[in-house]
Image (cartoon, rainbow, N blue to C red; front, side):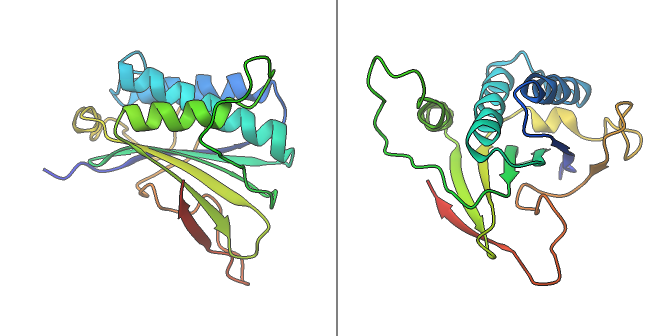
Length: 183
């Protein structure tokens, strides 16, 4: 049986207080779709969402930040897009023990690898932004099929059947499709 994708896409302002809002919204949708946000993978997904969104808010500091969560037969995808042209630098090394920041992408990479997932970054073709995506294999999506009766949630967030690779924003006339790199 093919599992139809469940997708949540929304934007937040680049403000620290919006990170918990994003996490709460995603938690509610995962649970509503029948994919427990309290499972190991669900909890990891919320941690990854928090780290990616915090990085976009703190380092990109551009508004809005677009977030998409897709659950389908292939697993769970978290995508965070901002319009800052700077790409995060991932060295694969942990920061100094007394550093007060710099662990976010290391945490994302480690958790993603531990769960057998993939971490990718795609630069907008116009060079004006980027999308960081995490794809996690998850057996739970088979339980998520057909839960939503309509394409709009009670929270007013538009749903669609798009897959993880779908752009987070409509493509402008000058074609700013993404160029993807595996992290």
